[in-house]
Image (cartoon, rainbow, N blue to C red; front, top):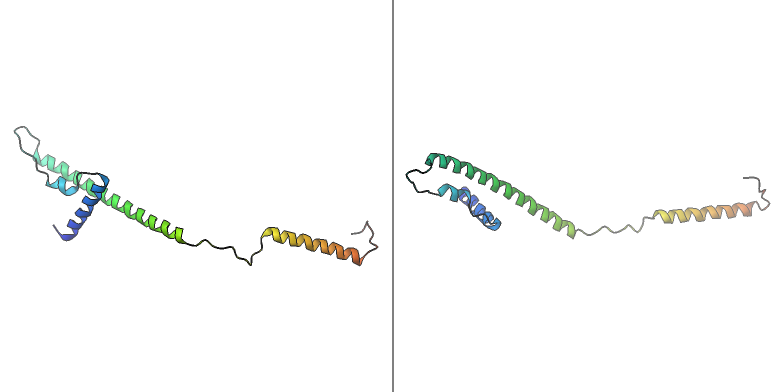
Length: 125
């Protein structure tokens, strides 16, 4: 067995142990059964176990992928929590302030008009 496969199986065993799964692909593959007079066909059992082993490998790959994605998400969440919140720009004026200034200017314009034309005709304008 090559080194890459051995490391992969070790990671798989550790993950399955964490998840409470007793069997891994290698232990299924290495399982030996006793022969009896009216037992099952060994070739058929081996074929079935090979299907189970392939499923275990797919499960492991899927679980590993999901765990990697989960760790990436946790890392992103941690980084987002540490990002300082943007402060309001002190140079920006909010809408209420603008409306108040406009009202004051309109009032001042009316006052100026009243002073400029004191004999104002109430029917003009």
